Image 1: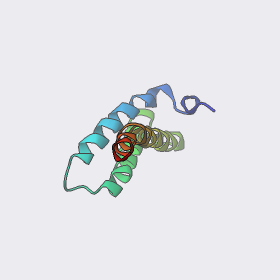
Image 2: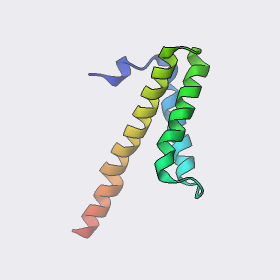
Image 3: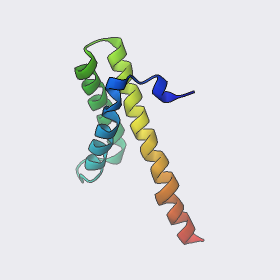
Image 4: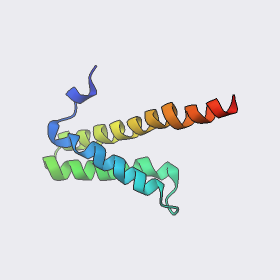
Length: 90
């Protein structure tokens, strides 16, 4: 199953945008880590509505691009940072 077959071309631009926003939020001391995915979800849905218009497809696209962004970030963290920490313990 290819996730990109579910995300429209217009909404693909939101993935790197949300990733950058997430990195900026992570570096903000006033925002707790658990709230970052929720903030990204709101921004993702709002941005998707801005791109595609106010309809159900736009809301679904917002959820999909946010999920892809958060999942990609977690894959990167688990594969690089956590692996490096684990290797240092060994």
